[in-house]
Amino acid sequence: EILAHQRRGWVAEEKMDGCYVEVLIGPAPYCGRGSRAAGVIAAARYRSGSSVCGTAGRDVLGVRVPWAPGSVLAGELLVSTPAAIRWQDGNGGLRPLFLFDLLQLGDMDVLHSLRAAGFGAGEELPHRDVSRRPYCERRAQLERMVAELEGPAARVMRLVPQARTGLRAFHAEILERGGEGIVLRDPAAPAGAGVAKVKRRDTLDVRVVALLPDEGVVLVAHGSRPPFRVTLPAVPLALGDVVELAHMGWYDATLTPRHARIARVRPDLSAA
Image (cartoon, rainbow, N blue to C red; front, top):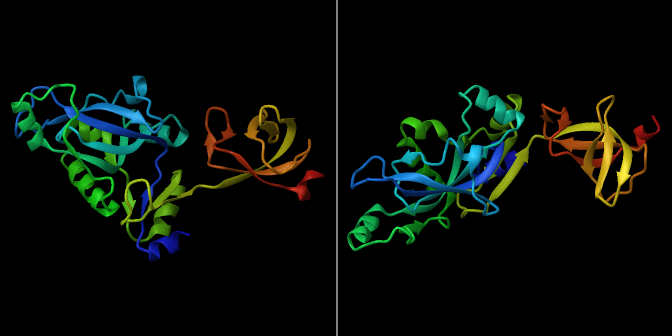
């Protein structure tokens, strides 16, 4: 799969272990024409539309940036998973935003003109929608914007690592250091299209110890570890069956597999 996409000219980005968020750049207080601190991260929202707040956004919200108000960028905000915690431990405990896309580009010249004409604080900030432009153009603009960052903004906002060649080696290196996998992107695609994910896939054989169809789950156990819940699959199961779980690493605190799902029943092991 990776080589097939590479032959088609797709690029690869590291799949960050976080939550998708969009950040809106608002006007920074007392910023004038030519100011380096033109904007501030005024808001961040999850894919569901709810706002990022509290400790989740403590390192990002309110940070000043040299970007035009009205810009909207997309990224992954690190969450409390083992891979994310390892990254944070090596970076002073920060919960950064890894940027991978640009959706709107603010227009500072138009904003100054509107302000001179009595632009209201509650009005929509002027911007250009760039989400339909090819991904390669949006990424190039995003790289230029991130290169402008200094101080706190440079510490809490990073570019998602990308590779344009050697995609299999890039994928293997990420998995070797405990990463989640890669996201393959079509350079010609608009936002939200031309995306394929190649994630870590670990497997584990577990035994069914309880069926809870009313709850849509099955209780499984691995060795002497406490049983844990997995979504009930479409295939029929019976108590005592051995099933193969596909998962993506482990939750360190509970020693249970992450994002586990039943991949297949193992009749060759069920009688063991």
